Amino acid sequence: MGSGLNTVINFAQETTYGTGVTPTRSVEITSETLDYSGKQVINGAGLAGGRVFEPGNARYVVGKGGGGALTMNVPSKGFGFWLYNLFGQVTSATHAGTPSAYTHTFTAASTLNKSFTLQKGVQGSTTDPYTFTGCVVNSMQLTMGQNALLTSQITIDSQDMNTATALATTAYPTAPDYFSFANVNNTLTVGGTPYAGIRSFDMTINNQMDLTRMYLGAGGKKAQPVRGNYATATGTLTADYVDQTLVNAFIADTEIALVCTFVAANIATTFNEQIVITLNGLRLNGEVPKVSGPGLVPLSIGFDAFTPVAGGNAVQIDYQTSDVTP
Image 1: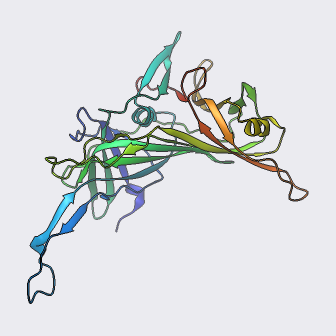
Image 2: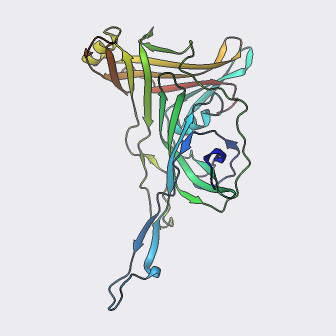
Image 3: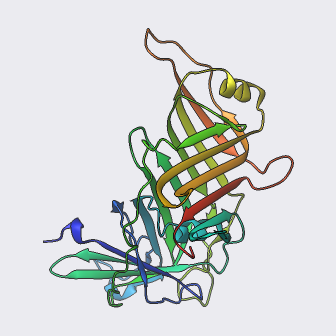
């Protein structure tokens, strides 16, 4: 009998899209939906007198592919891989005098020629391998719920899948930490000023990949997905009403800068494991507070990220970790 307790997720960056490589890294997940969902078939039988059922030799597989989602608590080590495949670009720096602390800055760029092999092991009588090649990250959701851990749901598209590749040896990061709602160093600033009363934060970055690039001569496999529209970053802040800062920005459609910092353990001296999400060109889709009784007044503020009017990055994520490379 299979048990989810023995699920394995291994992965490695590919050199060429769709050319599988041996996974060299592993990640802990809470759930997954990876499937061979892109299989397309067509029945080509014509009319033949006396035939009741179509013949099996008239059935053809005309398209392949797969994908799904990984859900995980965001770790303080190893998460840079997923951010790199989401954004397509990273700049890394070490801190002077603290060689064990590194900051990897992710900003949007082309994701072409950035793909990976992902392997999941599912326990049956043995742990069976399902190897997905030509994987790209189409979207990522980051959520910090009240009294929870920072979680991520990563949506992946795959060119193909097989069950013949042997399960690779697992290689998990050593003792990663996680980003907790309760860390006193977590902050959310609006226009550079800390904003109190935030209960939860939720953001989804969508690369808007065109997943339909199938051409003659490719054996039913798609060419590497590319962005088919502008990427989007949308989300919601839920809060208890404190003041008119967010409401006024919503009413006037003012461009605001929102910086959300989640902190884990100390690395060395003043450097902590952290993720800093910077949205410089934010526009709010919120509401005016409504009073429904004697309790606290709730506020729900949706947002969209844009390239700032003065230029710069619509979305930037800084990942401070002991990882030398993402």
